Image (tube, rainbow, N blue to C red):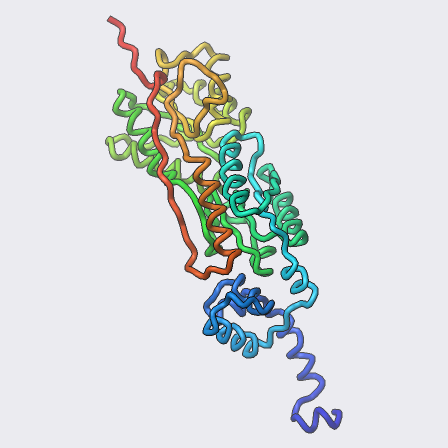
Length: 357
């Protein structure tokens, strides 16, 4: 034991035991102890004058108590953060994201921020790489449509104090700002309409089980059936992948059932395209043979007759999410917000029952 160790009553072994523990302390640990956001901790550490004195004192107290030592390179990067917002979407081929991206761009441009778009393609590894790029490029904030409700990880950004707002799907394990629609309520309205039109055997093409949009829409479908005294039939619940071919395959399997459904609810717009191909392949027509409703607008597709669809406020989702993330970037401190916007059911010819005299 050195003279310094003897003077302080510690051994080299004890010092080695402490060092790894201190190294594991993150900006999120400091934020939790100080009861502020990681972005606020980052601003305090970078001597941002916009932070209130009381908050600054709490952060410094938490830093001292935990022994947190910020990485000097990371601090330098954050002080030189660009005026760029990252937009990471799950599927660039889905037109739902087109209007959404415009909402993000308009809101960002009004505040002199630029937008960089990335497509995760529903792939968690690809999504993670883009999150790391956003951190490395010192983006001011990120709007994210997660690939997975349960497995997407945003700590790459939040640990560095970069604000994140999620859209379209929830993140199960993270308390973060979000802008969504009530998928359960909207799906229930669509299936309620099919029931009111006379359907009693309604099939649903749902999405991936780890997407909150899919689970919410499936829950709404089941709630509508039970509300009408119809017990859900597992054989009529077919899992798709939110892609065209997945919708085509799912509808083919439904139409192969001995007791075909008289109504069909499709969980997103791309699967609806596949559903229409499957109906055409099997010479099943709507609304004569089956009533048809879906989720997400399809005006871009130009199909006729028009289809009854749940219409999401895509542009507004993008705009509101960007406004939220820029409030965080500006230093505002407030509890995590969950904004739920209404979706509207547009009733069209595909659910008009044809009566033969």
